[in-house]
Length: 108
Image 1 (tube, rainbow, N blue to C red):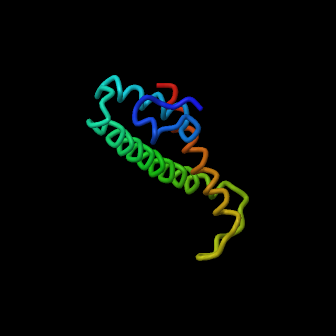
Image 2: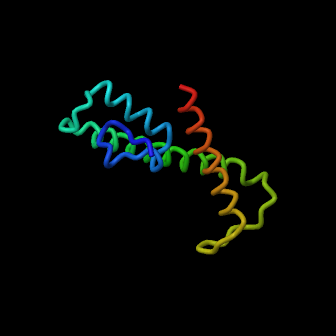
Image 3: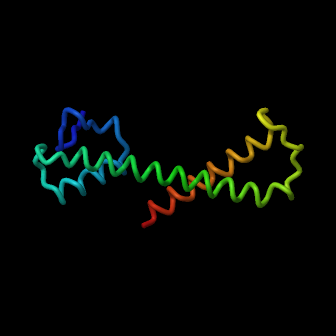
């Protein structure tokens, strides 16, 4: 199994995506390859923050799209605190927004 250079006992190729490994390599180039600099911890924290912001934006954008389009969709009336088709459609809008955000970030 090919291991990554930085903190090889923590970062194994099978556990992380190629995008994550590219970010780790960029951090190595910026911070150096010395594990004492904790560049992996800094990188991990920044990745978590970026993912959190992306998820939050996807939820907000998905809900905005849903509430703008909901009157024109042929959905039954929503009953509060009950699972219905509108919740699935709302989730789908959020999922699409998240996919668009992730795709746009990969194109950068």
